[in-house]
Amino acid sequence: MSSPSDKPNLHLVNNDDTAQDRNDISAESAISQPILRIENVNRIVDVADEPLQILYDVCLQVAKGETLAIVGSSGSGKSTLLGLLAGLDLPTSGSIELAGEAISAMDEDARAFVRAQHVGFVFQSFQLLPNLTAVENVALPLEILGRQDAVALSKDILDRVGLSSRQTHYPNQLSGGEQQRVAIARAFVTQPAVLFADEPTGNLDKSTGDMVADLLFELNAEHDTTLILVTHDNQLAARCRRQVGMDSGRLSEKQAG
Ligand SMILES: Nc1ncnc2c1ncn2[C@@H]1O[C@H](COP(=O)(O)OP(=O)(O)OP(=O)(O)O)[C@@H](O)[C@H]1O
Ligand SMILES: [Mg+2]
Image 1 (spheres, rainbow, N blue to C red):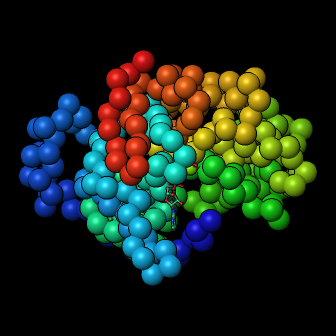
Image 2: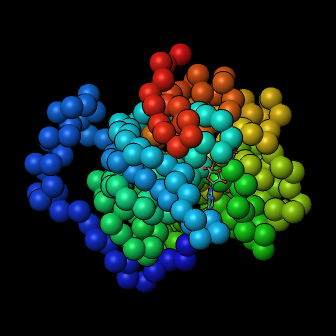
């Protein structure tokens, strides 16, 4: 988890300076005001002193309120891409703009501030903090934002995911499915503009998975939350309005349905 910064270094994009460029790009696309826009993103890491390219020239625009599934085989680069889209990591080259902010040009403190304002993220491995109870885990992003009503709101959200009787449990006292629901509650407690979820139903039985999926799409409908999901679950992918496929680090549009 990122720690809050007293004086975040915003590096806000100057809309006037970039409006002309954006108009040029928008003309090519049906998306007039994307919540997320990435261009020619490459990600190269060093493994044993050898460069390994994980993503190749990925371009993507996502409209506000859209539901998007990223599908593809294991190791194709889906989680790597999700981490870049959410500002958790930086690309080796290319640009990423989230909610109008050029996050690929920001340092970690500035990206953490943008994430706190706009992003919810459900990790493939939950990443709950082990020394905090369920309600404390959920309340943390609100406390980072300085919200006085953090605990009350967090209790409401835990109630909504069916965990009102598990608020004071620590993560190691919760089942895998319960931990997943706490992670989802933590991701949406701030009502983020974009909710990223990496295999949100991957560890759940069918009925709990359906309940979690329903919750994600209710959020989309109620708050116009943009949903960006990575999933191997064809049924979940089919509930999204749009699907893109990742194949060996290259992204392509798939037919909806
Ligand atoms: N930091 C890193 N250093 C070296 N290799 C990495 C790193 N991160 C990812 N990789 C490699 O990049 C590839 C893509 O990884 P990624 O986790 O994005 O795949 P994925 O599509 O999410 O797979 P899965 O469906 O199994 O979760 C994998 O081959 C992985 O081993
Ligand atoms: Mg993954």
